[in-house]
Image 1 (cartoon, helix red, strand yellow):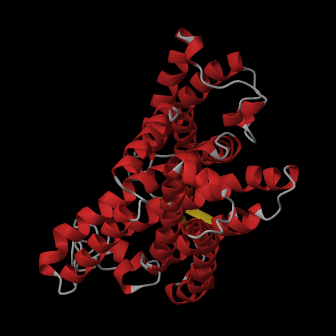
Image 2 (cartoon, rainbow, N blue to C red):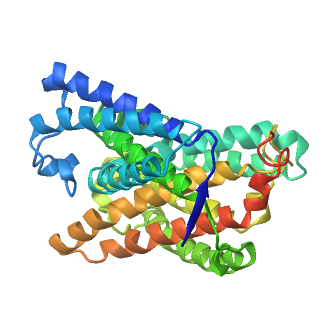
Length: 379
């Protein structure tokens, strides 16, 4: 590949990396000032399979300050209109290191747990509110609302989610919120690695090349291999969700009948997590479906409008990164615990890359939409 010249314009993609770097400095300085607030230590369950599991606690705060300071300087240099070739090399090199360290080596499985719990707890009320708000202008709206009300009634009168269970589940939510600090910090590191990775990729794409895009990146080709990736990612989402649904039967897979009877809030929480996985499977199909390009009619305000590319690419990339990062620790747990079937329920080594490929194909297929003002992003 021959580099001819570089574009001479500002790099807005540096803004997320710059903001994250400044926040990293603040976090590192806070830990230096209040070392007892540092939430990690070698051997803690939250650091399993991560660099923080072997890094001495006093070492992380100054390293984070140094990384944030360097990232701030690099991101500021990249935002300048006139950008020399050495600056591009520094940006790409820094982005690669930050993406590997903060995006892959540091986070572990805790960020995925945090996001999964949030989806399970917030997903049902958000879905119900959206359907209820958009039902009036959608022909199937009353039926959808009726089905949701029927499900709520069945859950209440069957005892699956009656008043007593919901109160106990509120304790689960409260406990999860109290313990969300360390996973949230790890998620912050993961977002930083992702922001820097995207920044480095964008910097490379800003460099003009003499050769045209390879055949596999053309929209028609991306549509073909993207469908395969979507099928694989969707299938990977099914086992966990279907296993959780067995908790509605007398033969719960991965759960004890007596324990679930004594703690119905655990049953409800497990079912919501399973439904979140199945909802993820449905959302994955949107990467090749028509409603992945135009908002469906049951959504209020947005109905009928083109879906911004970022609305699918940003969350899809984040989730694919979460799955890919969790692949190694989950694989280690499956082997060390003598439970290889765990990889059937959580096929992250396949799920993460497949979802990432599906998101990439979606972005490549809609490149013309991204470049066309006034149709997708409303500009």
